[in-house]
Image (cartoon, rainbow, N blue to C red; front, side, top):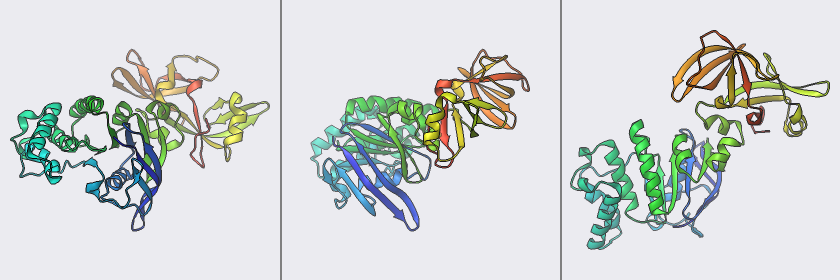
Amino acid sequence: MARVRLENVTKRFGDVVAVNNLSYEVGDGEFLCMLGPSGAGKTTTMRMIAGVERPDEGNIYIGDVPVNDVPPKERDVAMMFQSYALYSHKTVYKNLAFPLEKHKVSKDEVDRRVKEVAEILGISHLLDRLPKQLSGGEKQRVALGRTMVRKPEAYLLDEPLTNLDAKLRAHMRAELKKLREELKTTIIYATPDQLEAMSMADRIAVMNFGKLLQCDTSGAIYNHPKNLFVAGFIGSPAMNFIDCTFVEKEDKAFLDAGEFLYDITELKNLIKDRYTSPELILGIRPEHISISKKPLTEDSIEAEIYVIEPSRPDVIVSISVGTKALEALAPETFRGDIGEKVWITFDRSRVYVFDKKTENAII
């Protein structure tokens, strides 16, 4: 096992900055997930750690050794590509053995390691088959096994589950979590799927357009997003955002959303100290909105049911507040009709406020 550290790493392809001044450290034996949409810079970062790409600026360390000038074969990391990249003319056994044979490992040791990994992954019965005879899940296991067989300092897994169907992805997430406990080694895992990241990783590095936006535990990222992108990317259904203006009336303060005023007097000084202008964005997750037939508090807001979508064990309720559309989660026992007047109440302890100009979280 080894620490992996990136210091101010930048990679350009022509005029495109694929990775922009990226810095983070993955601890010895830690599982870190790079999470972000397509084009976030995840794969490029992986390829630089593996040595397939060279950074234009910054440094990469494996352990305490700078590896910018170290060839890929000498870095002692194993990378699994999204495409699996299996050799179509080689059997499963030969695909698993190839990384070891390339490093001139003895035949007996190759045989021992291949069979050991095949047993762990449940693919011992597939060793004589060719890739074209395998299902998608079986190919995924073989590709993972080829990564594991080397016992490297760190594993780099680039969107390994993206090509699988939903049921198989759920199964393989569980398999990877179990495998991670057995390997107890450093893993860097890239995915666009927040569920994979939230369920497996020790920490999550949220990226977009080559920049690291937040790196923390799943709980911290969900409960304390540092900016608008992280808040909207984490959570399903996504967080609701409402454009507002900070206003003061007498000794009180409100977020003026046009259709309603939301009292934030107790947070007035904190907001004024942190905002760059009165133009703000109020954020509230669907699970933190209560729907009722009558007002629950003075802050309850009149709304109208727009759409109801059963989604066991909850119901997703789309509601309109004037011209604003919001989503709320209600229990499966919820009953309502399209067009029916209701009241919504925000959990005051779970309200977020963002600076509209900087997109940074204020609260």
